[in-house]
Image 1: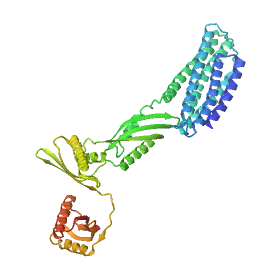
Image 2: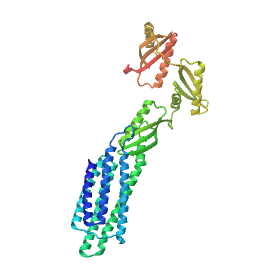
Image 3: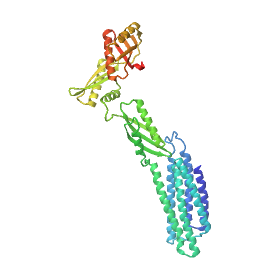
Image 4: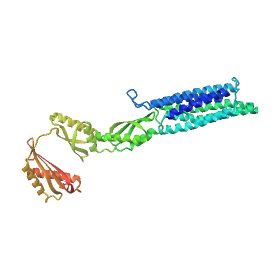
Amino acid sequence: MAALGSVGSAVVLVSLKVFLVAVTGSLGILSEALHSILDLVAAVITYLSVRVADKPADAQHLYGHGKVESFSAFVETALLLFTAVYIIWEAIQRLIGRAPMAIRPSPMAIGILLLAMGIDVVRSRALSRVAKKYPSEALQADALHFSTDVWSTFVVVLGITGAWLGQKFGIAWLGMMDAIAALAVAGVIIWIGSRLGKQTVDVLLDVAPSGLREQIANAVDETEGVLQSERVRVRRAGQRYFVDVTISVPRTASLEQAHAASDAVERRIGEIVPADVVVHVEPRARTDEPVFDTIRAIAQRRGLAVHELSAHQYDGSLFIELHLEVDERSSLRDAHREATALEEEIQRETGSRTRVNIHIEPLGARISSAEEMKELSRAVQEFLNALVAEYPQLIDCHEVHVRSVEHRILVSCHCAMDGNLPITEVHDFTLLLENRVKEHFPHIYRLTIHPEPVEES
């Protein structure tokens, strides 16, 4: 609606100024009339471009139609500069006497020009308000045009007033003010055209808005889960920005954690500018990455499952132990090759003096049937609770289940303990309990203890 109103205002101004050219023969008014005719063409282009730019993306225009606005503004710039060249040529011809300077100024012409100034003021403010509310390069270009039209029309008013006074009082040199006013209008047009032209060319060539890239990069660097931004690219099309960001996340992060960081980056950028954001995630090692995270990252990269990690300094070397889970259908030869490759990579990343010992076990991948052994369950529970008097850390044991699985006896239970105990002490104590149970029940293959604070048992 704002663009359509601009077209209507341009029609009125063109009509008034063409009428004045016919009445007065003024070059200044002619320059303003030509300027207004081009403004009318530009206003029509703006109206059409805004309608097209509002269309959503489709199969042929995957990034939308926003750059139509920039293209229309570029066309306006070319028209403005063409106008300025013509006006300068005509004004110089008149000033050096090669073209007639006979004009017919009148108070009526001055009044109509002042009316045109008023129309320019009203529509310039209206367009500027809408251009800010709905960021639009085309409407912004129109608003800029019409705000400068006020001053160019004012210059023409001075020129036609000087020519009128020159004729009224017989001062010949005042008749040149009309041509001088035309040159001033041409200068204004060139100034406006250069500013608008640079702005539109920057958008068409995907020049990043000044400071926006740095602002986005800083915001991304502060986002939780992101180590740093590695690349930020920004371009604009119409009212929207398109932002491509490459971020680094800890290489031990899960896919869900990396995706959460990516979503957080998109939301953060959306708070800065209305943008379509694409985030590419790169796994990176932290500068202060613990050796355990390094080992887990190596195993994860190789698609291997590891647990029971431990490390200590021994005889000037770092000694690492871990359990590696492999496909239960693997032969010892195949499993050992995987373990050796993992061992070598750990040594490459942690140092040649690192020694690695890997325990190989089958990866759980099958659900087996089991048979409950209730009598043995009661016996194990009584034995564990009898140890309460011997170990102050232990409060009680419950939910003891004994199962026979593929000719092996497996036991699981819950043991309540003081919730303030450090987890390292709890782990050592559960191992002690497991050994005591296996000593008393040697036919038990494995005991799994779930420790819990007494208040939550």
